[in-house]
Length: 223
Image (cartoon, rainbow, N blue to C red; front, side, top):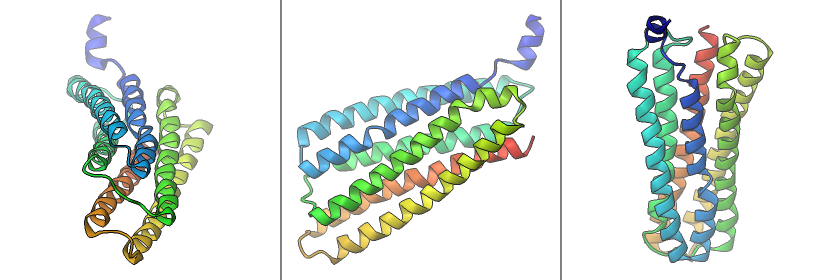
């Protein structure tokens, strides 16, 4: 029995869920950071950036454990490369979230009210995407037991489509934010650059979230 365990290996899906939860913890810090940016609360931003960095590091540790254990497995219920790509895209979400936190600490940004509304809308859309991804990740273990088939698999595929639509919505909000930003006469050039970097980090998270969904779709459809 022990020899069989060595060949089959322990299922990676428990760690995949743990990793997704830690990534979600990073994304959950975006709204508090955005609120602190709007308030120009530099002390709060420093604390949140430190928390983000620590959480992203914990996510990296789980990612490394997954990567270290996968090469020793001879049999997987899904394509090994699909799992690695899935983890890679989640990791990039956390990297962009950390970039967002770091840029937010560079200097206070005086953001006009009309921009604040769009900025927070973009942050909330990214959070919404992360919420759905966490739901999908928590279904992974059950999907594996069901050989990635049946009603639950169909439900997951529908949720993946929802993630793709949310990514499109985030791009739309981002473009609206950019138009308002560059049209404003109240904002200095450095603040525009910083807001653009913040926006890029947010849209990057949404882009990688869409890729996470696509990798999960491949796991299901290749069965």
